[in-house]
Length: 279
Image (cartoon, rainbow, N blue to C red; front, side, top):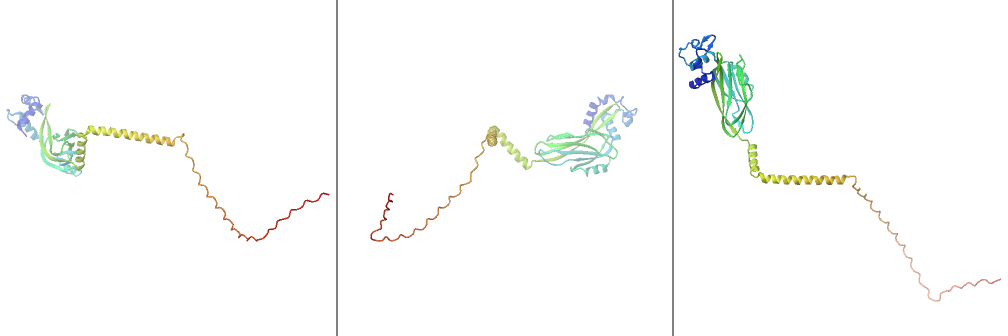
């Protein structure tokens, strides 16, 4: 703990603890007397003594994926408990790997934070929580990488110390963890295509407009043609008549009889019949 930071916190968060040491009480006794300190003890000395008396050894575990893909969202988790077994039981049920395991003294009320310039971080659990016997206290966040490369996620643990009517927030420890941020193959392809589209955005907008107009016109003509073909005013197509039957073949001519030879000489001339006589 940085002495200067603690003293500054005490002075600013408790409205000048140095000037109010004679009126602050805990259990009706002066803090100097309670701590067994010299009457000239500073606010820093008093805070350290109170923390020493109230703090209990606490198991602290941080969980987060250390190899992330750009554009994906992950969960980060900080677990603290007086019971090491409670922490182990919980970490066995969570998918994220354990990246930090520490033991540190903390008072009964604590808070945790997560910071990084390379990530979008959203808190998903209460900020201030109290330790319950035998149960883990859990703080969670969602983290989303903003750029590829190497980044650091830093977990911060704080404790709230009350002295009479006043209270002060005191940092306990910070736990940094490096994370590698990769770009997947499909993301690279997407970024390349997006860059091309951005560079020729005006031309593509014009081409897209032309294609849209042509598509609309083609669709309009197709629907119009279909409507004309199926409308009530459309004349039915004439039915096709069957092909005519082939004409029967003419009968074959009878064979000609052989001509008889003509006799030479006179031919008989038939007599003319005489008319009957009148009676």
